[in-house]
Length: 405
Image (cartoon, rainbow, N blue to C red; front, top):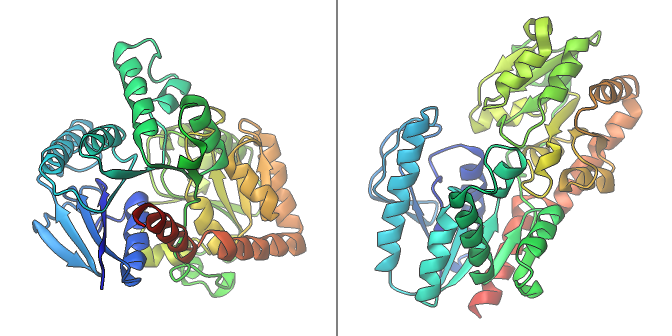
């Protein structure tokens, strides 16, 4: 009989299929399967992969989901996204104030300001909070020059966020570089409250598939090429200018495939010049198509800007590793991304801005099949050991039991 209650507060959850929604939906489905905890979720009306209004409450794979009152404008409308976040946050605020104090609250950084609200109210009600850091705001925006650290609102935000970190019973960093940032930002946070738990990918969804027999390869006529693929959100943390400049140089026999979209796509396309017409661009894919697409290449690209060290870990690396593909990382050597590739011997790393180094790495993988295959095998082995949903479930069940014992 389930006696321990976990409440996940997340703007995105099932049926949205954006990356963060998939991560937490699949994780908590498996945790619910354990029959150790009662899982409740407070989320917003979906606005990413669907805008179909959901009922007030539903049970999905053992999880009781409550869709709080909120707008659900499409994500490509900036003002609409602002209204979505605002209405959802207000709903959380009022519901949390009157919530019966039981169990454990889990919150993460989507949307960025929500954790400050949740931790503040939970502290007043003496409830325990696990705060999972997916992306760091506003510090990432400051590093990218998007906002000024002298802005009064940004200074207030940083101060409140620091208090939220210190006020959480556990702070979860998804990378070692992020944990270092937390220690610098909140030196008063007791060391035992900070844990590093990596992200995860569904080992049931993605597994290695022979390239020439892959239906995605056949559908898009990729059989005769050495395929380099970038799949996922083209977001703030990504260095796509370096990728675009490498594409612009041209490599005989190489086909670049880009799946997804985001605010950095324009940067990518502009850097490519005339070579843009030789690339394959596809929109975000549903989970079943994604499972085949991620194996439809010879190496998978993942990037991180220099300013973004410690600000996030691109989850796409775990899909590449699950597929048994070598990872080609454009990332600072001190980043979690680079550390994973190097310690797993599952690919190559080049520094952001080094488009010639990226070209050389592509050619190396193209011309050295035996090494490339070995890197792919290493990727899958490291994935199975550290980055499956099963491993994520084990990590979080241990954490929850520790806090609720």
